[in-house]
Each structure stands twice: as structure tokens, then as C-alpha cells.
Amino acid sequence: MKKSISGVLSVLAAVFTASIFFAGCGNKDSKKVSVEIWHTYNGSQQEYLVNAAQKFNESQNKYEVKVLAQDSSGFADTVYNAVANKVGPSIIFNYGSTAIDYAKEGLAVDITKYINEDSKKGDDTMKKIIASLPDAMQTDVKGFSDGGIYYLPGCTTGPVLFYNKAIFDELKLNPPQDWNELAEISRIIYEKKGIPGFHSDGLVDNIQMMIMQNGLGYIDVENKKVLFDSDKLVEIYQWYADCCDKGWFEFNTVGRYASEDLANGTIASFSGSCVNDQYITMLTGELGMAPWISSSNGRSFYTAWNRGPIFLARDEKVNRGAYEFVKFFLSAQMNAGWAKANSALSPYGTTQATPEYQEYINNLPETSALPCVQANLDVSGSFPNVRGAAQIRNILVEYLNNVVDKKITAEEAVAALVKDCNAALND
Figure 1 (cartoon, helix red, strand yellow):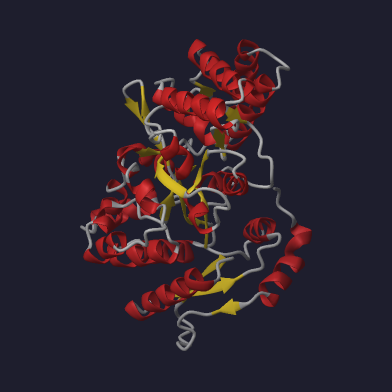
Figure 2 (cartoon, one colour):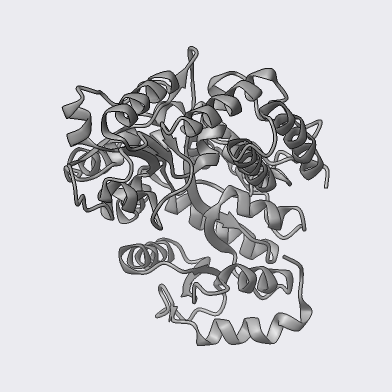
């Protein structure tokens, strides 16, 4: 994505033709600093965001937050061009990896200075909120190359094991607790039922977990190089390729989605996003759900998917207003409501301790996969948000694909992918 001066008119047109919701628009005080949130939410998420902005506007008289709903088509380009041309929003909701694109061009706001200013005044609200994140998840917030904080999680989800309970019960199998058990279970299912026992829907997350659970490390931010240049990664790639070659694992889906393959009886299990609990209707067997593998070799790590507000640059007053709104939005009671609106979890200990959040968690429907994510939340982790991180994810999958297809050896793949990953970090 690049700055596009010629895109200003189209950006403005997109803003005015979008469905627009002004929170607290009844107040016409022109002295208030206007803070804009652009989003593509609908339903309960949009309703909650609008209500949150209205509550914030009513709680003080300095800022007015406006919530503007945008067309999801071309949203990323529209936002980037608008921010580059200084007519964009102050906040969007996305992953930390998206914040990199803005931070590297000086288009994102480092809120560390506002946190420090608050602390000098005796207000440690935001500092305590961030500190309440699990230790392994702190990297998602503080893992930018310059040490700044440009984004904060709003809620979190993660992978779950979805499986055909009828098959597992018939063969007297329990959901796997580690990777070796996964291979053994998949072998038994393949030999007894003639179908692959497992498919990874979100392969890169599984690769990253195995890297971390084997203690290889991920990115050396200071020296801009990956840390998994190891014979152990060769072993991991070969192991996965062997499981696919033997028919125990299915590398690619047969239908459009892994959830479809499980429902049709094409595979016996898959690891994938917890939101799949809404889409799987079993045509054969019975749906089972279990926490995904979170430890091996004595080390624990579980990939967390954290979507939340990214701070985008306007002028100083507007930037401060965006920070103040997010501080309000991530307060325990407000954040509990946001997690519920997203059918997700809160990663913040400050939120988890509230009665509102506990009531939500304790009354999840039986069909929800969130308890499986909750079981791993204390070891949930994330990765540095640095330039090249997104490319590394693609590279890891690309080279495993080549090993599975027998185009190259696992040893050749790891040597090549380390070179390509380091090049991405130094681009």
C-alpha cells in the first residue's frame, strides 16, 4: 500500500456514501475535538461500538467520537489513502500486523507518551490494563521494532480441535494432548476408517506453535533475523510431510473448507478458528470440540488472535482523544461487553475479574467453542509486529507445501526459508 494523492476524491466520496452513524451527534459544541472511528462491523458489534462512543461522549466534554460504517470492499486501501492524505480516521479495528504498515510510514500513533503522561498525573489506568495481559501476549502490544505501542487487543480468539466424536468414541480415542498423540490418533483413524485423521485449517499457526513449543524462538527484532534456523525445524517439516504422505494428515481440503470436509466425513478432525462452531452441521457422526494442543516438550505456547483498535495519525489533539476513548473502551465493564458482542474472549485480567465477564463466560451455550480457547488463554502468545512478519507467515507455509509435494527436501526447505525470512525482515 502506498500514499495516493490522486485517491483523495475517491476517499472522500467513500466517506460520504458510506452508511454513517454519529455517536452523540446531538451535541453541537464546535469546541469539541472530533475523533473518527471507521469500521465494517454490523449487527451486535456495530450497535455496541456506537453505544460505547455515545457513552464516552456523555462522560466528558472535550471530545466527540463519531462512528462511521464503511463498505468492506476496498476498506483497507480506502483507509490507508485517507490516513496518508490526513483525512482519515483516528481508529480502525484490526490485528497488530496491520498496524505495521502504518507505523513504518509514520502514519500510526505511539500511545506510550500518553501512558507516561497519565502516570505522571497519577493515572495508571492504561498501564494496568496492558499489564494484565498474559505475559506471552505482551509481544503483540510491545513487539514493534521501535518499542512503540500502536495498537491494543480488543478481544481474542484462537484455534480449537473440531472432531467427529462418533469416530473417536468408536475407536476409543481421546483428543490429542501433544503432536505425537495427534499423529498416532490419525494413523489409527486412517487404518481403521480409511480417511485422514487430521487437517490443519490455518497451517501457519500450527507451524508457529511447534516452533515455539520446541523452544526455537521466532524473531530477533534487534538484529532482524529469525531464530528458528535449526535442525529441529527440519525435523518438524519432515514429520509433517511424512504424516501427509502416509495418509494420516490431509494437507489440502477436498471441499471448499475444512468444516465442510469434517461435516461430510472426509476427514476426522481439524484445527481451526473457534468461530467454526457456528458453521459446522454434521452430516455424518457427531461434532466434538476440544482445546487445541498448547504444549510439547515441556514448553507451552498457544497462538492468540487479537483484533483491536489501531491508533492512526491526525493532529495532536485528535490523537489524544483517540487514546482517551480507547482507555474508556478497554475499561473492564466496557471490554466485557465488547467481548460478548464479538462472541470472543477478553485477554485482559482487569476484565476477566468482573462479575459481568464471569456471567458471560459461565453462561456460554453448550455449542460454543470458546471454553476450548479459554482453557489455553493463560499460555496464549503472539509474535513481534515488525516489518516482514506477514511475509514470514507466508514463507513458512510455502516451503512446507514444497516439502509435502516432494519438490525439495526438508533440509533444503529450511535453509531456503530462513534466507527468505531474513530478507523479508531487512527489506
